[in-house]
Structures are given as structure tokens and as C-alpha cells.
Image (tube, rainbow, N blue to C red):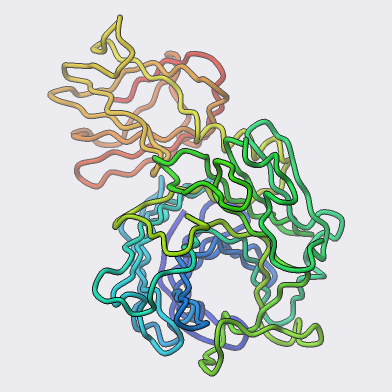
Length: 433
């Protein structure tokens, strides 16, 4: 796995980019021609993005979002960490209109992508709603997720999407709602009015279903500690607000397009598909459907992002492994209380959902020993070990050395990070020394 900065050409537009290449048939691209929006390059001119922070004003018809920053005045990207075990990227942007006016004067966001060799990433969106002025008035909405397919010159959405099942939404039990192409609604519609069962779901896993390429997916779970939201005003249910787009919601104002002479969006006519770069919207998700309500400053949301060439059941296993971490025991933890109490040379500090990692701290210890007890199937666990003092780690699982081809590691002088290609269903003992 590697991260690099390079110029790329897409849809006849050349510009600088940051590319992260895991050990899979897709890669992550942050490209100036798309205002450094985080995208999955799925091959053959097809990309996907889970969107960004977006708001809208009752004072005008503009959308305030990073893709309006055509000249990249505010949008920038940097590598925070890079190695064999993982890469972390930070993308910073402002929510502006095409006139470079920022909503409430200083509405900004930071997005952190923690990317692993299996092509999975945790997206952490940190929003900073503006408080510098009243420009734009009270907001209409705050959007944090949209399933968007990007087709560069030479590709058309109707040719790369599966017609019988172009998009599906799945919950934690594998129950599914699927949509053909074109989407079935006449106009943008609250999803809960069509499928009221979603208000009782605990997890939401959306997948864009593609032909001859990996299919991208994004998942999150309904817990305001990890995904802030206000209950839906459309149905009264306790769930985030989803909106299903109208049929053939295909746009041409982004990416690889410097146009600034429009308001809100520019539709792409069907005869333009393939001749111009376009993007297609399926489903969005909002912090609130209550006009005027604003997320606290700051607020953060977590998403699991990846792509798959396998079954929906395997995607569900990946999401559950992130959502429901294993229990971890060291010899220094309380045997009677399950509150995480510990004292001594090996400290388990907890599971970091934003990094998909089990975090430990060593104090005057040369090795790490613990037992992992899965609650669901654990897939490709990640360890973060603070105060590591050794050189290359030796990893043993249930007393047997783990082949160096099975795990990857990196050390930044303070933290050791280990990613392991393992699947665990029963209690497992680990030693790292």
C-alpha cells in the first residue's frame, strides 16, 4: 500500500492529486479537478464519492459545498500518516457558493480518511458550522452523505449500472431495499414515506451496484455518539433523514468542469452522457430535516467506506466487525468489572471507531499480550500500540507465529500500527514482541 502525490488527467483535465493505493482493485483519489473531494476510483473511468458537508440558504438558491470551490481557494489535502499498514489523509474545505461566499462567513469541515490494505476506510467528517456572520440566513438543511457515482468522459451511468438492481440499502440483519435504474420516484422523496421500516433500523449500508467493476458501499450505524441526527419530521420516526433522488438524476456541473455561471446545479441531457463528465445521485442523508436547526460546532460523523466484488453478506460481515468490536482482556484488567478498569504495564485503552483500531499503551513493558473475544466475526483487526520500543514486531496468534505475509506494520517513533488479514470467531490470544 502506498500514498503519493502526482498529476493525473481525467476527462481531458490535468491537475495535481493525492492517490492512495491499497492492495485491492480500487484506489482512493483526491484530485484538484474534483476540488480534492475524496473518491474511490473503481476503474475504467468510473469513480464514487460519499459526498461532503453541504448546506443551503433560504436567502438564495445556491448550495454551499466544496464542489463550488472551482479554483480550490479553500480546499486542500494532506497526508497525515503513510505506511504499509495504513494511510491517513486530511481534507479541509469550506462550504461556499460559486461566488466563493462562505455560508455564515466561516462554515468549514475537516475530513479524515483512515485507509487500510484491504481497501476499507473510515471517513470521519468534522463539521464547523459558521458563526462569523449571518450570511445566508438560517439553513434549510445540513447534508453529510450522498451516494454519488462519477462517470468520466467515455462512460455513461446507464451502461455501468446494473439495470435490475442499481442501488440497494441494507440493515444490520441483511434486510434489503433495492432500486432499479432509473430510480422509481418522480421527484426527490423522503425515503421513509416509501419504506417506513427504515425508522427501526440500527445500521444503514448503501451500495451502488456496478457491472464489471467493484461496487462501492458506505455504512454507518444509528447512534448519535457516532452519527449526530435529529428525528425525522416527515414520519416522526427516530432516524436520520434520507432522500431518494428522481429518475436519471445526472448532473454536469462537476467534476472536471470550471463553470461558475449557474445556480444550484446543471442537469446533463441524456445525449451528453459519455461526452461530458457527469455525476449521478441516488440517496442522501441529512443531519436534520428541521429548517433553521444547526449541528453543534464542532460535530463529527463516522462512516465505513469500501468496495466489493463479493456478496452482500460479506459486506455485512465487514460492517458488523467495525460496529461491534471484540472484547479485549489483559492480565491487568479487572476480573469482576467489565468497565475497562486496568492498571499496570499493559493498558487496553479501548476501541477507536474512527480508526477501526484496538488501542493499547505500554508502560515499562517490552511486549503486548492480550485475549480478543469476538462478539461477531472479526475481520482484519487493527492494533495501535503506544510507547512501542522495539524494532520489527513478531506477532503470535494462539502461540503460533503469524506469517509476515499475513500482517503489515508501521512505526512512527511512538505508535506501532499492525493490520492483520485474519478472520476470528472464537477467543484468540495475541502476543506482540
